[in-house]
Length: 101
Image 1 (spheres, rainbow, N blue to C red):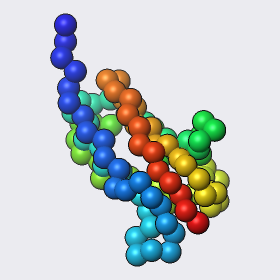
Image 2 (spheres, rainbow, N blue to C red):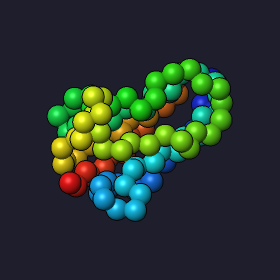
Image 3 (cartoon, one colour):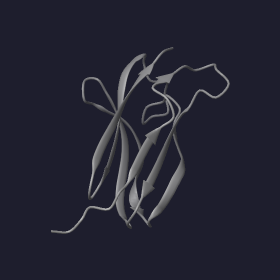
Image 4 (tube, rainbow, N blue to C red):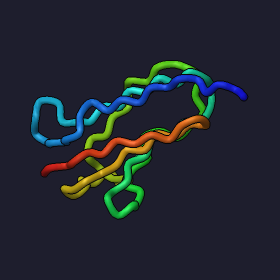
């Protein structure tokens, strides 16, 4: 049996409030092996709101990923509960966050 490499998935905070000093929600990912990873935002109904990243990348740390509270059309998303999903070939992880307008 092959061991699964350790990966990290970290979200800066769970509440997004526009108008504050730095309103974006930042995501940090450490991917231990090269491959595809995706980072997507869904609403509480399970509908895709925005794709933050979905590509083949080398192993490494990715800290420049953020969600600014907009949807895939760059329109402001409504207040509510959102879920950020991180998926690679070894893991699927999620973080819930609340958008307050």
